[in-house]
Every structure is written in structure tokens, then in C-alpha cells.
Amino acid sequence: MAVVIDGKEAAASVIAAVTEATASLESETGVKPGLAVVIVGNDPASHAYVNSKSKMAKQCGFNSIQHSLAEETTQEELEELVAGLNADPAIHGILVQLPLPKHLKAEPVILSISPEKDVDGLHVVNAGKIATGDLETGLISCTPAGAMLLVNRIHGRDLSGLNAVVIGRSNLFGKPMGLLLLAANATVTMAHSKTRDLASVCRNADILVAAVGRPQMVKADWVKPGATVIDVGINRVPAPDKGDGKSRLVGDVSYVDAAEIAGAITPVPGGVGPMTIAMLMANTAIAAYRAAGKTAPRF
Ligand code: GUN
Image (spheres, rainbow, N blue to C red):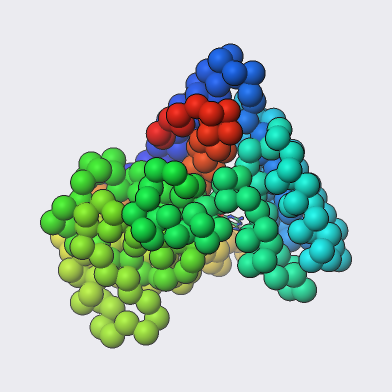
């Protein structure tokens, strides 16, 4: 039976470290980290995410500002708001919640954020730094940074000799995750929807990371005995056993069966999920330290 990797506990320890670092920065320099979260439109799930980000920022001792813009906001208006936040010395981190309403293009908005305030780590400058192996001077995308922290808890920081397979090649997660594993010396395979015989590719993985967005797609017989399984999926599925019209969250891995084979596994919920917000807070504290001319802590 696998070790269950407790993302809630890991996230709480990151948040405690961020809160402490925030208090030291403020007492030494008078600088309080400022995080601006921007949301456009009325998507309830996005509003719930954004509210929890703003709440956590306050809990860390940040100056937390939320901009809730109407659905019909134009590209120009959104980019003007970002330009104002770029120029505001009290703001160290800017996050524009995705997805944006259909009439807006995300890419130019992300590129309009100053890379040093891009706490989501999505700007090409930050993505490029990871790609070139510079993990020190940029900002690393939050979900891969959080997933990596969980991998490091099991295997340490050096993954020499280990095979890692990442299923999914998105800019938001799969690509940066593959690069972080590579930077830690793992031998990395990036698998995706066009990969032939995915099951046997996965069976080679000492570290198997699933980010496909398909409920319970990764079966127990895809898992190498003793492997570490990191499940990034969050899928809502019907749960008639809980009552009429009820649902539950499941990951991309068939958890109960895979936990019999794996050495360590993240649950859903309570695995990678809580790490995303924790690493967003870490990135904001790092950006504020750098803006104050101080060496940023590592989280
Ligand atoms: N929507 C879902 N996850 C994320 C994230 O990590 N960052 C942003 N900006 N939007 C998201």
C-alpha cells in the first residue's frame, strides 16, 4: 500500500514559511508583498478560485487586491489595467485568472505582465528561463512548482537515474513540469494524446505525473510497482451513490487500485491542488524580496 502524499500538510508548511518571510521583509525594509488578482466575467468556479487566492494572500500578511471586471471588458481595458499594475510599486505580483471570456485573447495579456511580477510564471521570459535551466532568477509556474515540491519530499532534490513520465504537454503544466524534472536530473518522457502504447510508456516510470483532464484514465496496471504517482487532474464526476444529482472530485488516476501498486501517491482532492495556491504565495513573496533588493528565500 502506497504512502499517501499529503498536499494539504505540505501546502500549510509552505504558507507558514511564506508568512514568516513576509513578516521579516516588512520589519527589515517596510515592504509588504502586494498581490493583484484580476478576474474577468462571471464563471463561478473561477470566482471561487480567485476568492481563495485573495483570502490566502491576506492570511500570509500580503496587501491583497482583487479586480473583478465585467464580462464585456475589452482587450484594451484589460491590458490597460495590467499596465497600471506593472507601474504600481506597491504591487509585486499580478495574476490574471484563466480562462478569460471567449472574446479576449489570453496570450497578449500574459505577455503584457512584467516578467518580474508574473507570479503565475506564464510569461515567455519565465517559461524560457526554466527551459534554459535557470531556476534561480525567474518565477516558476505554480502547479508544476508545487508538484515538484511533493516529488522532492519523496525522492530528495536529485532525481539522477530515475525515469519520469509526464502525461500532458500543456504550457500551464506539462511542459514546465517536464523541464523541472529534467533540471533535477530525471530522465524525462513527455507523453501526450498522440503517444503510442501509453500504458507501456507509463510502466517504465519511477515518477509518473498525470495531467490529462480525463477522470481515472491512468489504470493500476500502468503503474510500475513502487513508483511515485503525482495526479494533477481535478475532474468532477457524477456520484449517484451519494444521492440524486450529487458529484465528487476524482483525479486522472484510478486512485484506489493504483495505490495498491504505487510506492507513493497523491490523493484528489488534497494532493497537488492545495500546492498551487501555496506556490503562488511563495512566488509573490519572492517577487517582493527581489523588488526590495533582498535575496529571496527558497520555499
Ligand atoms: N486557472 C486555473 N489554474 C490557473 C492558474 O494556475 N493560473 C491562472 N492565472 N489561472 C488559472
